Structures are given as structure tokens and as C-alpha cells.
Image 1: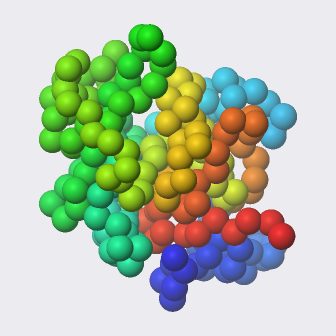
Image 2: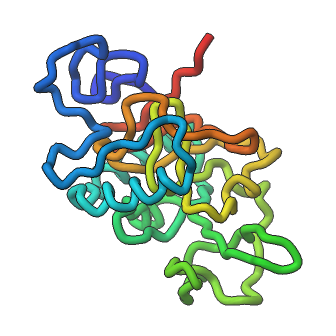
Length: 225
């Protein structure tokens, strides 16, 4: 979705500047401007190194403007005619999308480890326990829902880049969930956490998101020709 207030990622920069501008005073949404900001790893660094960097960097960022992000998500999902959405219960530092439950039918996940590692899908309001990772989730035995009900997936992450690459927490749960599933996917982050270059490490099983939602709007990922 790209409109007057939600520039595409291959159009004017995320701060309203020409993406080819060399003005060093322009704010870089992928860098915290503070003496304590950690230097960005090289594109060749491992995911473990990137995760350590992203956790530290996120701790230095202002709290997400979750209300603004939810407003853009609601407008976008309405435009897409999607009312059944797989969402997530936010960890500290992540945008909180729970306000969408007042307008949409939300679903949530539970992490399962046996007999295989996977995410099961459940009604949003069934999440009344806390997982080993500190995430709210439904208790064991909660009825599952079929994924055919769901029209879009909102993805959390430590950080994203402008190619739609998501850096998760290392469990591979969402990669397994999305494998072979033709579903509208939206990464959710803050505009200051969205890396302005294609820098995050990728593996063959990693699936890029189709859109990224921030306080500035919902931006469609522009694929290379």
C-alpha cells in the first residue's frame, strides 16, 4: 500500500527525503543516533551476531507508537478485505497490535516442541498463559483453528530490512509456519528499527514479508526486476 502518506520503499526515503540524498544530517531510520548505539554488523556476519546487535539496539530505541501502527494496519487490512488475522502478543520493545482485536478477528499461536517443532493456531482470547520465552500463549489442549480461516499474518521480529527480510529470535517457528503457505504477510516494526539497506543475513528457508508496517504506514516491498 503506497499513498500520499505512505511512501513506497523504492520511492522517496522513509524520512521524506530523496533516497539518493547525500545529506549526512538526514535521520537514518536504521541507526540510533546516540554515542551508545552499537556499530552495525557487516552483511557477512552470522545471524547470532546480528541478533545480539538488534537486541541491544532495540533497547536504545524509543517505545513503539503502537497506536499509529495499528491505525495503519487496520486501514491496510480493510483495504485488502481481510478480517481474520494471525497476530502476536508483543514482547518488550515490539509494537503491540492487540488493539486490532476490537476491530478484527485475531488469532494467536502456541509453540509446540513434540513430536515436532511448530506453531499451532488458536483464538486470540485463549492466550492466558506465558511460554518459556515470556510470550503470552494459549494453554496446552486449547482447540486449534484451521489456517484456511486466516487471511493475513502479522510478523514480529528483532528487526527487518527494506527487502522484507526478517530477523527473528532463532527458533525458526515462523519459517516453518509460512513454508508452503500462500498467505499475505506483514512485518511489524518501528520505522527507526527498519534497516534502510538490504543487509540482514538470509538462508534458503527464509521467507521475505510482502509488506512492512511502521508508524509511517504500511509499505509494499519492492522486488528487484
